[in-house]
Each structure stands twice: as C-alpha cells, then as structure tokens.
Length: 139
Image 1 (cartoon, one colour):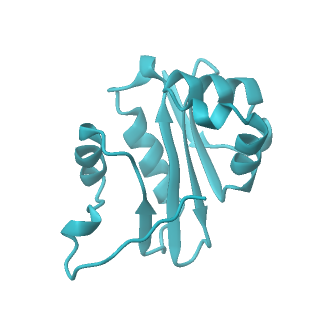
Image 2 (cartoon, helix red, strand yellow):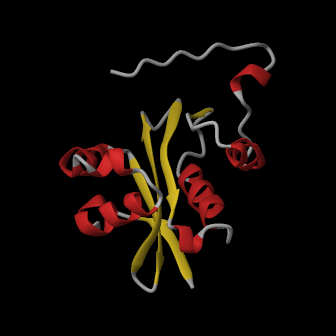
C-alpha cells in the first residue's frame, strides 16, 4: 500500500531523497546533495508517497500561498510508476492551495508528460486562449 501525504522536510532522510532522485535519473540534483536538501527545506510544501515506509515518490511546490503555486519536482520511483502515484502526489499537493488561481510547472518534452499534466487540468502554454507567453532563464 502506498501512502501519500504532506510531510515536513525535517523528517526526510538525505539518503532516501538521493536514492529517489537517482532512481529516476535526476542525478544533476544529487551531485550537489546539500543544494537539493536546501531546496527541499525552502519549498513551500512537500508531499511524499511512501510504500512500507520507503520513499517512493515526492512532489514539491514553491508558492506565495495566495496567488501562485509553482509545482517544482514530481518524481516517482520506477517500481511504483504507472499506478496513479504521480497523479495522487500532484492532486494532494494542489489540494493544499484551494484559493490559488495560477498553477504553473515546467517539465521536459518527454511524450507522456503532456498527456499526464493535461489529465490533471494543466494546459500547455502555446494552447492557452487568450495567448500567453512564458519566459525562463537558467543560470
């Protein structure tokens, strides 16, 4: 059984976090584990999925809590993918923001990403009406 719930980042073990990020190939995060730990601690909310106590998934947000929420990381261990865990992580995270109108995320161009996020109510920016522009800068 997988349990999804909001979690205090103080209860996250650095090793289990690194193992989860590594399991999905996000090794750029784990090469500087201290930065990842700071990012998690600085997140507005963190929602985890646990299977028999083991960290099986995580989603986190950056937000002002009133007008905008940015969904940062959504990751699910490969052993638990395709079982609704990612959907439950995102919906549980967004349920923490009932009055927030703007919900934003960036993701890679992997083919399944679009269908997954559209099924959760997101619209790809070039499909928005009226048209919107999005800008991003990576340092």
